[in-house]
Image (cartoon, rainbow, N blue to C red; front, side):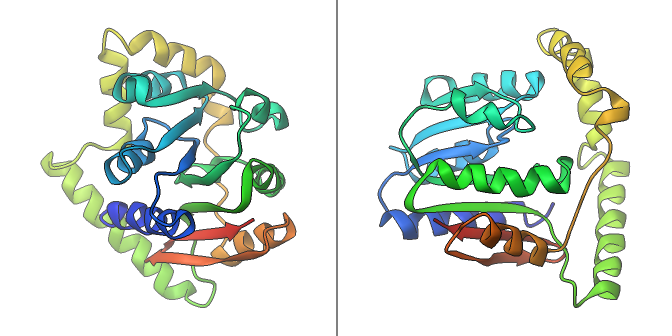
Length: 231
């Protein structure tokens, strides 16, 4: 994703705005390898971070990268009980990126309400993901095709590693291979290949329904966007 850093920067700027620039207490939701956490620490060295994910491969990488700079939590966001594994203090911000589209609509809507409950009053939630603009269906299709062609060209030349290639490297790694086998048991191939990608307006409406007093779009890059809600 060529605008990957832009989305993170936009979300972290919003975090700075709601905390007055002070180091936040931040939850990296479905945080994977720690992409958001690492950028948060680079911008706010004193940030107090909690990362939640379930994927054993990604959690292993996150734990190695973050070490003692974050609390890493193994929890299933498909289970409403995930919040019981969090530290008790409310968060200033909850951020997530390119992750929740694996959950079904009803679960995402419920998760938004659960996220609101772990935020302090005035706290921020932001989700950056594939979220097309409903008013641009033809342009969105063209943007997707153009982006796919660019990625395939980079994969062909070896300038970038594709998702299947990355997982092949994981399977060949001595430390990560056992975690990859564990991952297969958690996410059977038949159960983990359905993406659900509604437009940004769906997310904004869902945030309002979940009780956020403000909700809207804080960043857009082609067919991706970041929506945010204020508690």
